[in-house]
Image 1 (cartoon, helix red, strand yellow):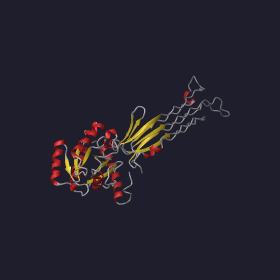
Image 2: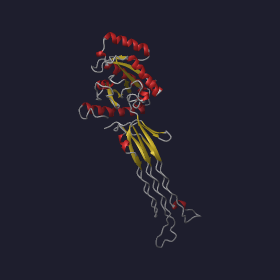
Image 3: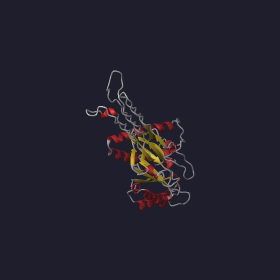
Image 4: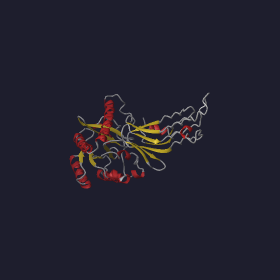
Amino acid sequence: MKFIDEAKIHVLAGKGGDGSASFRREKFIPFGGPDGGDGGRGGSIVAVADRNINTLIDYRYARIHRARNGEPGRGADCYGKGAEDIVLRMPVGTLVRDRNTDELIADLARHGQKAVLAKGGKGGLGNLHFKSSVNRAPRQFTRGEEGEERELHLELKVLADVGLLGYPNAGKSTLIRSVSAARPKVADYPFTTLHPNLGVVRVDDGRSFVVADIPGLIEGAAEGAGLGHQFLRHLARTELLLHLVDAAPLDDADPVAQALAIVEELRKYDPALADKPRWLVLNKADMSDPEALAELQDRFAAAFGPAVPMFVLSALTGEGCRPLVFAIGDHVDRIRAARPPEQVLAEDALDLDLRETADAEQNGEADPEQPA
């Protein structure tokens, strides 16, 4: 299934049914009085967050969603039937904005969360409601209200505790394969990763966190170089960024200069994203000369300062991965401890679903190379 994280849709709620102006007409019952019923409510368009969906591909092709109108009222006190709501199931983490005003209509951050995107019109009143002591035979009734109509922009921001970023071929996909059950594509050419991948990392019994791998960034991404900034939105909800650096580049590039260029690209995209906690991870230690690696660590410490934690590992062999995993687990636990209990329960439910998916892939029940 193709990964789609943006879509534009047009939603039209149903019109309310008109009220009825009717009078009771039965044999031997003169002056039966008004008996016109109300019109039914028009159908609404409702969005529901569903953790079993992880892409907006359905809304790339089905762009118009229209609810039915409510039925009109009838005589004999018959009220019109209300129309059913149209339910649009969307991935957890979807933002819904009005395309004309840029107003944020919904942030579907929890499984099962609902939001009304377009409200159906109210049904009109029948003449039964206008009867009074001075108006015994009212002929008034009201029309049903029009339903709301909106042009919407859907934007998916995946939910993860940790985000991986770095230059292409820095080893991000290899790392996520090493520490989780996720199986993103790995190859010896740039931009192997073309869409975000999620993996659940188990620290120990009862402790885990979700990590997101996004396509690599290069200098000039703000101007559209490489894949540009289009996937950086998926790091907006993360609590920690792991900045992977190739410690043994084949093209003799300067890893420190590349790392500083990535930080500058983050600032160009969103200063708040650049200010998130960020750890440096020097990868491919197994391919580096120990003396050159020690010198590189000193250069990174001088460039980024002591406030930025630094780890050295080999994602391919697994050397140094466990200390990193335990450090991330402790960091995530401290953040979760400061959150409201209801938010932690919602995140645990999402983690459980991702863990089940990861187990299925690891046991061969799902195609590990099939994109999410």
